[in-house]
Image 1: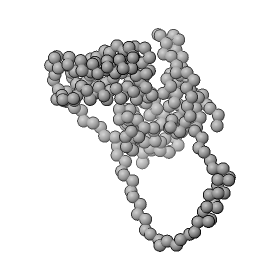
Image 2 (image 1 turned 90 degrees about the vertical axis):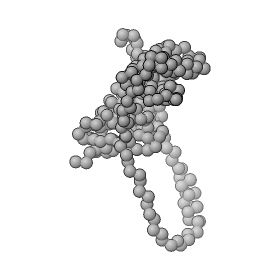
Image 3 (image 1 turned 180 degrees about the vertical axis):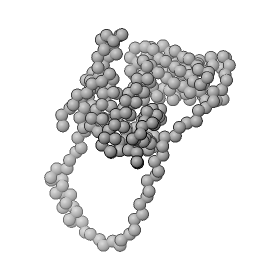
Length: 265
């Protein structure tokens, strides 16, 4: 099969397009990144991300291998076995994505907030120093929600984002462990750079709508590729009010994924 070219604002969006076109997850595709694209400045110099994609080839047995297999089967003595009743295990019930209860924000003093910020900055500065990556760290603590929003500014921020935000998510998880250690109440940490979170949210919402249309049109259930809990919630929320399809999550982490199916009417 020949490669097919796809383009979009980002590589992630281009991969999403390809997955929809080939009706499979990206794990089953061979992807070549031709250009990662450029955002430009004030709309000038913008360049799309370009990728080339084809299905991964599944090795097929040769005629000789098939003949050899047949010979082995023929030469194997067949023993009579008593018929046994086979009891099939029922698959575990597919559970909908659980919605976490909102945690009440704890009232914190200015001194404690400053301490939380200092701990987060010390940890992240150490990480970036080890990576030899110059990064400016901006922080804002939102008392009403109990959130610590952290933004990174610098060059080559794509390194911090990683493939589909995996590096950014890992840093966010580790920073959350650091600031919550030994503290009363939960501090929700959110890391972002170059507005990645909003761009990713928009991509996933577009994906959800495209998948919903496809499921309604083909009447076939579609399983999306594995996503983290935050991204799964975006898909669920985007299709929550859809009259024709419903969503649920299945599988275990880190392979848990969203399934979109036609509603029983």
